[in-house]
Length: 130
Image (cartoon, rainbow, N blue to C red; front, top):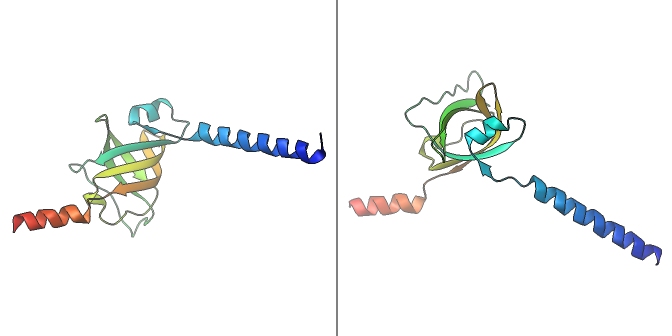
């Protein structure tokens, strides 16, 4: 075999190894109970904001942190401490996706994504009421 063929095979093997490694790290959505049981891992949890509990956010004290309660898809409610500033229209979100870990009996989220109501849904509600 030529040296270029051997080098090509080594590069292909490295690429396959990288793809397998990335696929193994691909996370799926979990719930709070799984996050509690596997507290050493990062989890993605989908849920809904608990509107009956208060949202604590004071930008004068810490503009990059707020806390709230969320129910996961299985109905388990848990305190969440988000290490980002509070997103606009946070209270109006239909669904929340958190990425983080359980520490000290709270879920610490370092990333938050919101699914907000569609502007077209709001328009259709307004048009229906006219």
